[in-house]
Structures are given as structure tokens and as C-alpha cells.
Length: 277
Ligand SMILES: [Zn+2]
Image (cartoon, rainbow, N blue to C red; front, side):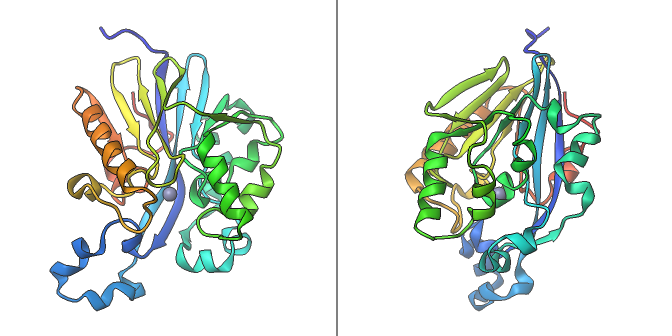
């Protein structure tokens, strides 16, 4: 029997669906050259739809929420330029974090820690729900610094002012290390690349299975084949070393990768209230 870590169950949460030009996520030539028509890149009907997801780890020492999805009123509160580039094409009441938690019998105040893969709009958008409860918000220090820097320069992209303003004075825990075990079997691993403070979460259950939640270090499974990313790449050097690290981790037995925006995610893994062990 594997040594117990304390991780009993891992639930995957459904925060709706976002759409975008595929070039954001994967290098364009891969998708378009074989179609023989690079002019189609800008055509909206070629956009892809990707799920927005999170995870809830049930541990004997508490509940860890990984990412919080998009703001429920995104079409109204995001900057219009951003909404036009990354619209949420599906979001209903069931995709609110309160209702995702309710599927497993929890309320927001039952969450012990929130870990943010990074602070982009589709990951930070419902963290405000936990502000009054003072739930610890754990993020890499580089990520807060980068988000606020861009905001201050008025370079509004995937960091949204509405999200940042709502969380001023929240119970932030910026970490400045590349590896941190939050609870036994729940590890935060810095990778950068997509944003300076992007992290992955590795969860190892009592059963001895590991799940690596990549956040947006990888958006699509094809990235593992081509070891390259579309326009949403901040640092290629970090990406290459992070990809090699991810692949080394995946060589370990009973280790699975969970790519939060994988278009086929829900055919590979069950949604809450079903769970992984
Ligand atoms: Zn994302």
C-alpha cells in the first residue's frame, strides 16, 4: 500500500466555456498550414471553445481550491476589448463557484486555502467570493507583481481591473520559492513561461495516484507534442525547461496530467460531484 498523504478525493469543477482564436494557445502553423490556407487565421468561425475549470482537493487537513474561473458578469465587467478577444460563450448559475462547491456539499467558507495558477481573468474571476471569509489566497509573488505592473501601465489584457480591485487587501500569501508543499501530497511548483508567476499543482492521493494540474502553463494537449505555445507565451526559455520538468514528472508511475483548458477534458475526467482518487 502507498503511504497515505491525506488526500482523499479530487473534484474537478466546471466554470463554463471560453472561446478564442487558436493562435493564442498553439502556434498557428500547426493548425493552419496543413489546411493550406493561412489566411483563415483571422476568421472567427475558426475559433476554438475551451472549458474553464478548477479543482478542489479534499484533504484530511482541509479543502484546497485551485483556481476560481471567470467573473459571473464578465460581459459587463471585463474591458470590452478583452471580452471581444476572449468571450465566455457559456456561463450559467451552475458555473458559479458557490454552486460548484455546493455539488460536493460545501460552502465557500469551508475552503481552507485557495491556490491560483496565475491571475488571468479565467482563473482569478471568482476569488472575490472568498474575500470576506479571509480565505488565504496563495499565489507566486512574481504573479502579483506582474499583474499590478501591467494594470498600472494600463496595459489591460488577460489581467482584469475588476478582479484586481476586488482583491485589494484580501488575505494574500505571495510565495517566492519554486517548490512548496502546502499540505502533504499537495505541492505548488513554479514554472513561469505563460506568465512570470505561473505555477502548477501536483496532488498525490492516499491511493498513490498523482495528478498534475498545469494551469495555463499548457492550454492544450498538443503542446506536449510540439513543445511550443501560441501568443500566450511570456518566456520561451522558462517554457522549454518547464515542459521538460513536466515530462519528467509524467514519467513517474501513476501520474496523470490535467490540462485545465483541454477541450476534451470532460471526456477524460469526471466532473464534480464525481471525483478522482
Ligand atoms: Zn486560462
